[in-house]
Length: 463
Image (cartoon, rainbow, N blue to C red; front, side, top):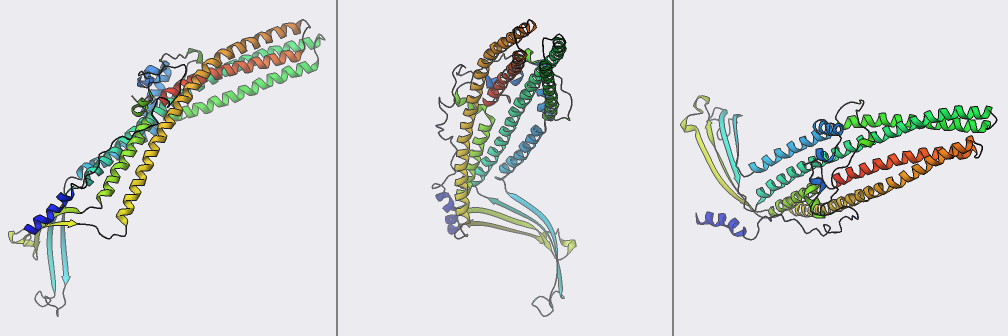
């Protein structure tokens, strides 16, 4: 008994030398005031990412599409299945504290040699019936089971954060595609108006040619401009159809026509506050997922470290054994066996050391990935800020440019009709006015896109 108590006390004495470490968030120098730059947009404790998506987007049609996408999108539904799988592992981790129990029945028929020790006694054969239960339990001295449980929990939280990241990305993609469709609608409308105007201009140039005020060259140039606008319209219509197909996939549906409003009806009513950089650690789903991946690697390193130490396990077996089936459940058929073991690994082909070295390297890799994710998050915020500011400034400039070209086009046509300008000046003014108007629409879309990018970059959309 004294020897047994001494053996059982050894793990308790060693326990003071090793305990599974608790995770602490590392000091991330990358999260500082210079993580992302902003000149014109407020950066304080307020954060537009804390606003729900249905309060950010004012368009009622867009809101409905986002709600439908969150319910039906295939990527969202797959992410939910990943969460369910991770949840199953969490349950497995919690069950690690409990003993395992196996119950089985067995029939063993053995033919014995008649010249053997038992062959003549059993008349050459023996049949034994068993109903057995085996119970085993390992003491969590080094925190191995606890670390495994925490690793499973971190993996589950990582899956949940990944689901949020998919949700945020989906909302941004739906809004971005919707705004792009609106911009193409506006370009289509302008192009159709341009075609109508150029058709009238073609009739005018033909009349001027007949009157001797214009040559055939002017007629053909006008005709060519008309064909250019018609080709542009074909491209725009095709892009709209392709974009509608992509939009339908985001909604988890087959290709279909997409109902929508107009570009000029879109408003940005949400204050564009970026918050402080440290808020990315709780708002950005991909940052959360990267940290949970680090926690998982940290706990698995604890598990690998515990393998260097002895394991203490207890087992018990019992049931019924009988040579006669009708006496199997007789009291005389009962048997039981109790055992405990203390196993210390000594030589194992360096497997334990290799597992520990790999676990440490994976933990360091997870830490670097965490830091890289934070840096990328800061870059995306900064990019969205600069794009928004640049688009806002560009819209004003392009408005002035379009007004100038529109006036130039009007003046050149008046001068041409009065014989004070050549037709090349008219053609150039018309083409510049059209391009300027299309560029203005692109700038308006870029501003909306930058707002969506900023909302996603700050981690909004999943709240």
